[in-house]
Amino acid sequence: MKNPFKTLSKFETGLWLISVAVVFISSLFSGIEGIFSGIASLVGVTALIFIAKGMITGQVLTIIFALMYGTISLFFRYYGEAITYGGMTLPMAAASLVSWIRHPFKDTDEVEIEHLSFKKILLVSLSAVAVTIAFYFVLEALGTAKLVVSTISITTSWSACALTFLRSPYYALAYATNDIVLIILWVSAAVTDISCLPMTFCFIMFLLNDLYGFYNWKRMQKAQEE
Image (cartoon, rainbow, N blue to C red; front, side):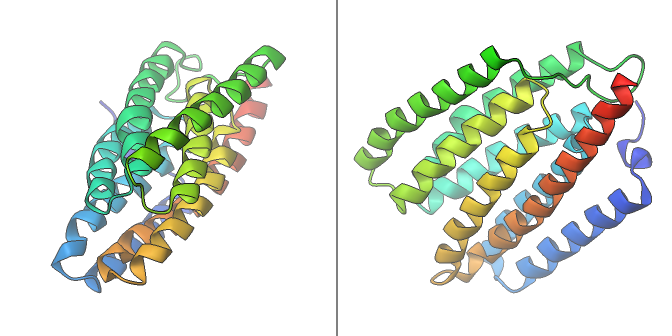
């Protein structure tokens, strides 16, 4: 197996190192309670840099991150996040892993990027609406903290997972939107519990990585078509 870190460009290595440094430093100020959050964040930002390159390594790390983040969310009663990552992101990452393995671009480490048909766009949109409505009542019954924000996170997460499975560059924009939602969610938690600080910085770095992911996937798509 190839060392995936050797495939990173200088810019990608710099982005990854900055992301790791920000998350690590923030965890130092959150006490012993923030260590687990910090480790999860390090796994998450590492996953994103490889997903931005269309590499299956990113999906493997996403599965690990989903398990860790779902556990953290349960502790803070963010049931929407726990359900999203444990019941949606995790299985969708596994499905995406299989999809990406089955659709490599020629003999490279890149996944083959697809154009979305109107039928697929409609299917993703309708399913997102259905999932959002269904989960709103489930989360309300569970007494989820920050119900509205958690429900919006369901919508953006489902859309991002579906687009990742479909190998569309727009997965990154959906995740970027979800990152903004989660930044709001964890900032509100960090106000009363400093151990949430690593997760806040985690999703700030997620946002930067996802924006780069969209740029790089569009670049890869153009190169593949040529």
